[in-house]
Image 1 (tube, rainbow, N blue to C red):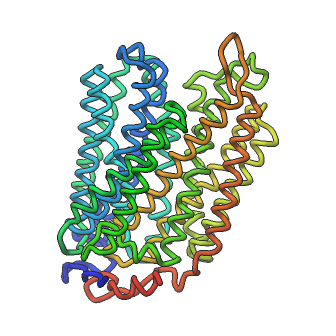
Image 2 (cartoon, one colour):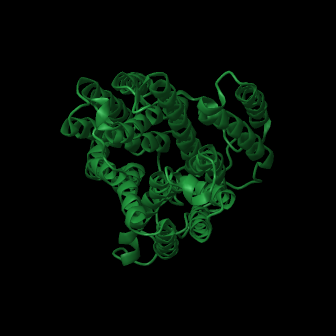
Image 3 (cartoon, one colour):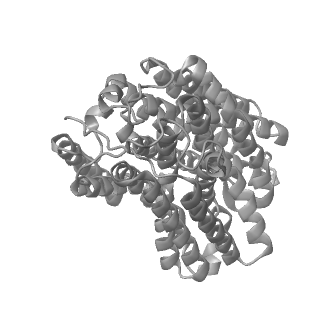
Length: 502
């Protein structure tokens, strides 16, 4: 399938600053503003966590229904990320980025105004659109920044996922503990509105476009297939892995996604270029993203539960949710501090080496967790090592994609990469839940996971991290640090990008 040539503005600066002057305030704030948007996205995903134990009482809903406050965001984010990425490539990344943050803000306002669980779930579904913020922002950075600035900016943008998650949990816990729970959503609404205003002011519209007609059939097929797949993965523990509903969902996912792949291969302008995905550099990067997402997510899930376990278990520390957030806070700071290191390693050795190193460090962090998960300082050290490896790995993944695809497909390709991480996180959540449910013992008449269950979860995550490292080493090497030559219009040609992905 021939790639459409990108549309660009001949007057746009070639890899230079946005219009408005070389040293303009807007130019200097473009990267921080985009990073602020990525941090908001991650905060949005985590702020609801402190509320989950109390939401059944606050809303009058069953615990199983309340869990959809998380599930709905996961599903909509997985579906909308590749769709919005493709829309950004076609119609303008800045406009789609504003729409995604706008939906997130609208969802926050809606949550602040209601206690009806049905409306809350619908609002959280809207907020899932914000998952596309990071791939869209990375694509804008590729189009707007010169090569010497691009690596560090992309590394920082990737790190916002962990930074926001680490900051959001303790902040939300403090708000929930000392104020009305609706205040938390008013705060995120104000932050979201600020993000929209800042992006409108500081971020230029990328001149790179991929013209054509949007693949509506492909978007619908992908949505149905992913909903069936992720719904089965996320609800398997509650509904029973062998239940007719879960079996039916997995069968439906296999059939729908199979038909979707066939439709994408036949479409003239597909939603996802599967021929590009089939190239080793792109396909193996997506496989590594899935495994890395699995390994990373287990750290947050298990650490939060472990330190909050009652002291009567013999291993638990009995921490409150606020204290738990503070335990996880150093991990976010580490991700912020280590993102420049990731960029330097990628510039010197290539992003695949950074990815392999990062996932190996994640595995080492889990080895620390298996060795000692009794003392708080050792728990924090192990979590910090995992966070360090996650910073290296997550910063390298978009760089691999940037080096492997044409400029006019950057947002959609990075959207698929984020989708693979999301699927990995969903599978990680289901796997951790299954392990902990299987290994429990009664404490005060209540079944509580055993330390052996937690250590087994750490071992599984560490093994998956080693598998991700092995996959990273099989990715074809980089031909250059930039991943492509620039044309007169300030963009890489589709032909150059495809050659690099071969």
